Image (cartoon, rainbow, N blue to C red; front, top):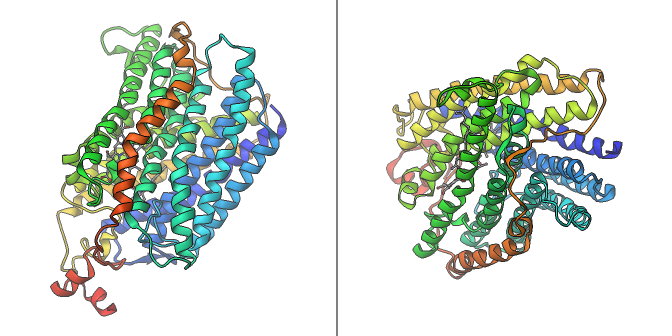
Length: 569
Ligand code: HAS
Ligand code: HEM
């Protein structure tokens, strides 16, 4: 590939990883605020909600979007043996970068403490919304170019199966394009005019519904690059073959159908959305777990095959024969560690999906417990592992401290397991999410003091410290590799796995059209009534809160729970 493409990929990997240092710092701070170790509403000049916003936006939006684009360029160029259009790729990069700078300015200036979900009634500075819109539009551009590259390749290879990694990249960006249309509408038509003062009010339920149309598909946009690695790289790294190529295709098209029409499962508690819509989208949510179950069984069979090829015996002996600590195959370590965490991330997700159980866990600490075992589990580990892998291969530089590099993912797993156990256990006891517990529930001086949450938040802080250590070690490896000298040929090269069962090409699984049509039908069925409910009935006024107290102002005033909040009135 050309120098220009390599440079582009370096920047798209390097910028978000540099920003990640801020994101990780604020993660650790969150655990500290929650544990009650401090009873402050700000630290080092940054306020609690400002820090939580920076944490969510940098880690879950900026890092993931930049990486998906960089990894997309790498897979498309590698498998299709064609270069993406340079002008298009660089315009996309600049739009994403300028958008990120705008949103970062608004967050750091304290004018956008609206959390990474940024729906109303929280209101941000217009530059935050504009920045988010530019980041999204920038990430759309490569899709149109990749579609052109793919069509050209297909014309030359009409009877060859589309490479699985190419199929995965296209599926992922189609999901992204479709779901971001809703958030673009929310930002441009509802939020920006409101933030500019052109409109006085905004329909909160409609904005939330549009956000979640985007918000759950977003999690599969995060996940699919990792899935591409599981299907197309892990088998080779493990020393075996992918158990079934067709299983991968079925899973990817399954995501295309079901990633978007499930967003209402984030709104099971929203009173204006009717029960039937919730039930339908609840069922579809169980449906979207199926591609992950397919993946779990296919990858388990793949690992078994690899282990047996390496001489394993017995039912589970193959687990003992995998290259967990081989510094040369460090990517295996990052991927297997993520898969292990995803078992728990998946189970907790299925709990969330249940309309009944959701009532118990919604808005509690259980939720960050769930999503640190998904987005901060397989997704994050695949992103950082692949970033250092791609950088080292494309620059011809050796990995700095390879033995440390291979233990980073396992240290992360230990940290997350402790951290998420604390959060999940606390969540089941009612510990709320997005709350500076140190000010109230974990402040012995406060009338709301809740000592049952001491052990759970302590566990979370211990896990958080271990995760931070793992992240610091990763930064040393990544930036150390950047600073070291070139010693090998600089090539864009990805591990390529063969399939054990390489099924014949089935046209249905090699064509986008039937899946796109079905996707559109399911979307219309799932979302017409949801959007109708949301636009027809904006709901009653919600109780008012102050940022430093988890109880509504009126309740607090009458119960005399929070002298500080009352004094402010
Ligand atoms: Fe979720 C909330 C349901 C997957 C992320 N989710 C969230 C939020 C985030 C998030 C960020 O139904 C919070 C949003 C907010 O801020 O409010 N989620 C699900 C379901 C799945 C699921 C059913 N979530 C994800 C993924 C995420 C993610 C993936 C990020 C990447 N989630 C929900 C619901 C809510 C929710 C509700 C709203 C709750 C509320 O009330 O607010 C499924 O896709 C999960 C399927 C996964 C599996 C696991 C398969 C296991 C595999 C590993 C196999 C391992 C092997 C290796 C082979 C079925 C593939 C073994 C090796 C060894 C060494 C042992
Ligand atoms: C929220 C800790 C890494 C994504 C949180 C919360 C804590 C936390 C304590 C707040 C929970 C709450 O009160 O609701 C940490 C620590 C990390 C870390 C200690 C590592 C040292 C990550 C990574 C990602 C991530 C790598 C994603 C790639 C998120 C998201 C939120 C969150 C999306 C939700 C923000 C919100 O509610 O608006 N994290 N985290 N975290 N974290 Fe992390």
